Length: 324
Ligand SMILES: NC(=O)c1ccc[n+]([C@@H]2O[C@H](COP(=O)([O-])OP(=O)(O)OC[C@H]3O[C@@H](n4cnc5c(N)ncnc54)[C@H](OP(=O)(O)O)[C@@H]3O)[C@@H](O)[C@H]2O)c1
Image 1: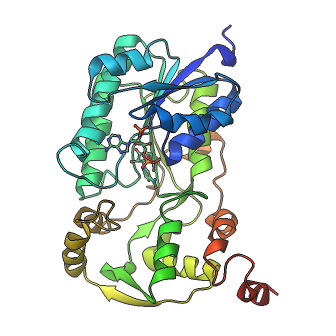
Image 2: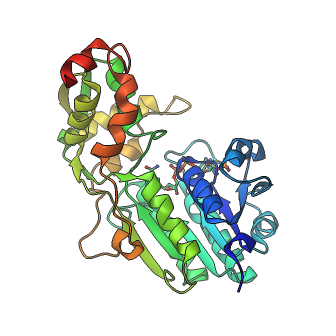
């Protein structure tokens, strides 16, 4: 029987937030991890997560069939963690990144006879009306049409020390005395710990090839929070009280139009549309229990890294006084 240490996993998007966690866990599991990337230099700092030569960068052009085929050649498993939050110009479009790349990759996996293919989608994409959500759903469809036995994972908004969610709102709250409640802040989210999502991906690697094939898993954490509750959560753990004010979807879109001129906009019109539908696990759908994983509470993980947003820093007087 083939040992785990003889197995090769190729991951696209391994340099990203989720991907970095998947790479580290796969390396601990014994796999040889090829990180297919547009920028091989980004992989160097991941190498410390594995043994010498265990984590290998592979230059890959995500738009080129030959390049993708060469990257995944000989792999026992392929993982696609590539994704974007906003479109920019003609190259960075949801269609290219969330539909065309998965289509090309799924076809390549089928052609190469890859046994396990994990594709990362997004929670709430089936009901979402944003271009982001619709492209994620379309991505799932094109994957299934070429590789029906793919394992599709739909994570909720992910948190972890280096996240772009709680950290981003805490940073905004640090800079301004008020925070907008878009559409009244009623949109419900189900934040999930990035380490738990990465662990689910690795379970696919560690299990029999058939176990997770041909299914869609919705992965959300134990708490469902409205956006208003997200702000209250951040306020609690940064001890920065901020005034909240309602912003209609219409006005938010108008403001987002201006923000879209920034190289990395913190809000886009499409993201405003994302806020019109909830992003929570649908009752009865396959999820963490299929992986024997108990998802971590945000209350256990997030306070540890939001500490730095305390007035005066993590060791501030305010914190010491309030926690007694
Ligand atoms: N973060 C969340 O809260 C969240 C929630 C739900 C679903 N998801 C999905 O989960 C997956 C991983 O999310 P993440 O937050 O880890 O993603 P990420 O860090 O933002 O990006 C993942 C990777 O995508 C590649 N990428 C970035 N911009 C690109 C572009 N313009 N064209 C082509 N490739 C590009 C990069 O890989 P290289 O530079 O190495 O090529 C990057 O490392 C994505 O599919 C995302 O849609 C994320």
